[in-house]
Image (cartoon, rainbow, N blue to C red; front, side, top):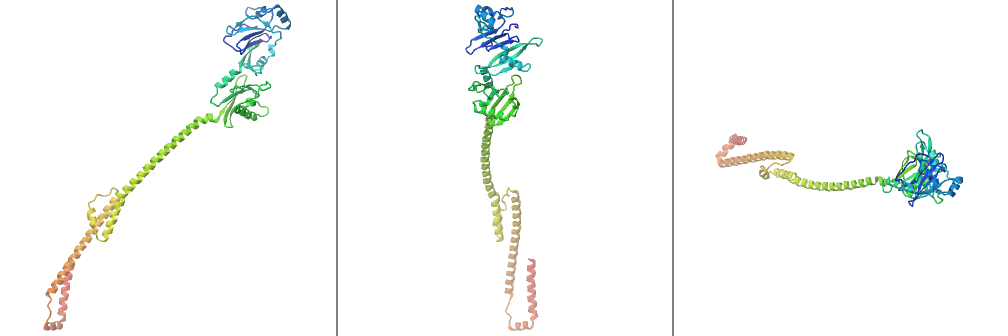
Length: 416
């Protein structure tokens, strides 16, 4: 036996076996009580081993049986005081700890790693075991403990990332070790279930999908990676140390993209509202702009142009009354129209002046013609017979007088 070790506040089963099959184990039960089991040499007392004198509490009859059939015995164990509570009782059976699954699992585990056993129907826990060495790296035995399945379930549930996420543990061969759904690990015959036999649909689908990916000769450890299937994201990872269980995590795609989708929908709604507001504002501004444009066009384009065209129409009839009233008006605020208006008014001004001058000239000509006619009529006398005779005798004298009078009138008109 080795030096005595003390363990406080540990409520799970804990046991140790040496390579010589010396065994000490504390087995806890769900009821809260516990027992300590021993398989130690009889008739041996050691100062460094308080439990080695267990045989002293056996009855003489039990000692006789123990000498023949083995000394595997038990006693009540106080978990709070971490001490034996009462006498030992012989189990009356041989016990070979070195043939137990936890012992063998520790021997088969890689160096420095823990060996794990699968749960069985009468158990509610997994067993984890490790080899024990002395200072010279010589194997001395195996220490093991039990990890309740409820611990695994709670640990898996604590690591769920979303409401509909799930996790489960599997061995390299695909046997179910634990799940966040807290479902039984055993089938109807008491055997550990395959992961594809899980009850939750999403977990069952992902397990069946992964199994279909396995090639001949491969196990679940070769499936490490990320996958998307049937609207679900799930990943496969392998524990870096023993027991190297395969950890499968999954969740619906909506659990990951849901917040993003909601954000996009919110942004889309905001953008739509902004677009509607901007569109309404733009339509309003456009309508106001059109109305203002029409008003400005009417007052600063249409009316000035209509006035110009009216003036042109009246100018054609030599009516310049509008020009006289508009001559002192202010110019148009539109530069191009103002330039055109100014040029047009100047043109009309010159045209009106020319017409006015022409009218005055014609009026003078009319007055001159009227005066000459009156003077000629006043100086004319009817000829007598003698004079008529003379005139007929002197035709050139009358022609000369008539010619001089015509030249005189023509000269006056030229001066005018």
